Image (cartoon, rainbow, N blue to C red; front, side, top):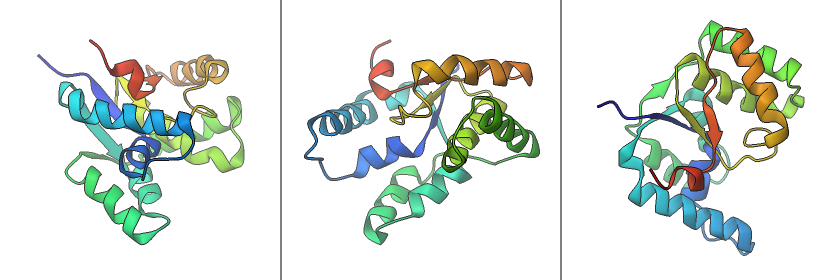
Length: 158
């Protein structure tokens, strides 16, 4: 039996490795992420992309090393020409702000690689009920089945 495929967007790795936040909601989301990582991740085939590696490498050197250690050994998906074209279309037609082009890349890489889920805590541009249908429409127009964009909480139970 094949496992569902999950693309891990960078916020998942960040929440997994960050010191507990003083913000109660963020702290709860960090704990949900750690719980999912410990209890559920083996039920899925996990993937990251070059974009995740790039984002995880940024910032504080010690924190970046910790993030990179967590994704070590997880298969790396590349940004193909098809994924780049889909990302451009997503950025233009959803539309996403220019600073969110990497979010479009995450969706495009996940869609072009047949991921079942894109897991994220980015609720502004990705796990967003208003944008989700637009993201799905653009993916389908280009011939790709979009991944289900969700948080770890949504994949806690079978």
